[in-house]
Every structure is written in structure tokens, then in C-alpha cells.
Image (tube, rainbow, N blue to C red; front, side, top):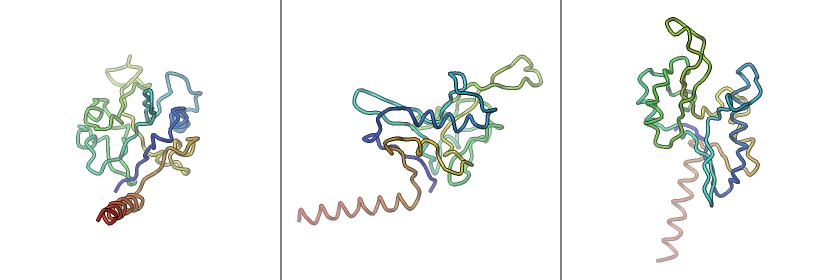
Amino acid sequence: MNRFVIAEPQNCIGCRTCEVACAMAHAAGQDAQPLNPENFKPRLTMVKNATVSTVVLCRHCEDAPCVNACPSGAIVYRNDSVQVLQERCVGCKSCMVACPYGAMQVVSVPAAPTGLLKSRTTRAQALKCDLCDGRAEGPACIGACPTHALHMVDHDQMEATLKKRQQAVLDTANIQL
């Protein structure tokens, strides 16, 4: 089973600290520019309504629709997660359409002019949660959340949750008998 980050909406206050932490963690490798509207590209999305707020993140699916939909092979399984290989991404948006969670986004990023496209200054690129792959501390969003609404889920935690829920059902059934 792939690892993923899950949000607990009942604990989320909608402060967007997770978005800022994500954008900063991924901007650090890009010539350390200060964040501004042009380069603020978090790989998660805060959604809010009148009563609840939470973040939408990639679930790193086992049989990921985005992996299957990518015509250029830019989305792959690596390190118990689903990763985008930016050098292969053509920005076709197939992954965005295929994702059942709405966790994929395609953004414009600066591009070096090459070949016939010498005047081109931007290119499309798929972005999604990469679990801050390569960051020793793990996902930046988890550590930044002031209410601890974000948690990493792995195989062991899923098994423990399943057993707990099954036991609760059994306990409820025994009480009613």
C-alpha cells in the first residue's frame, strides 16, 4: 500500500498554513525566490464552505487513474507513492481529468526556449502532492499544521484502523444481542 496524507476536517481551521508550507518546501529548490503570486504553487488545495474546511491531497492510489491516463509516462510509482517526473510531463491535463479526488493540477512554469519554440517562456506542468519526496522531515504540511489536522497514513495504520472499526462493529453487535 502506498503512503498518503489524510486531513481531519473536524480539526482544520482553514488557516492555509499547510499550503504555505508546501509552496515554501517546493520553492526552496527553485533559486530560493521569495514567494509571490506567480510562484506560489502548493501541491494541495484548501477547500472551505460555511461549516467545514479541509485540504484536498493526492491519495497515492494503488491503481492510480492518473498513472494509467498519462500518455508520456510522466507519472510513476516510486518510494511507496505516486510521483510526477517533470522532465517527461507534456502538460496534456489527462491526469487532471482522470483523478477522482481533484488532487492533480496543471500549472504554467517558466521554460527555457528550445528548438522551434524559441519565443516560448512558459510550459504546462502537472503538480500534485509528492509527500515532499526527498525531504528528511517528511511532508511540510504535516509539521506546519497548528491543529494537527494532517497525518501520514501507511499500511500499518490502515490495518490498525480497520481492526479498530471491525471490533467496534462486533462490540455493537454483542450489545444488541
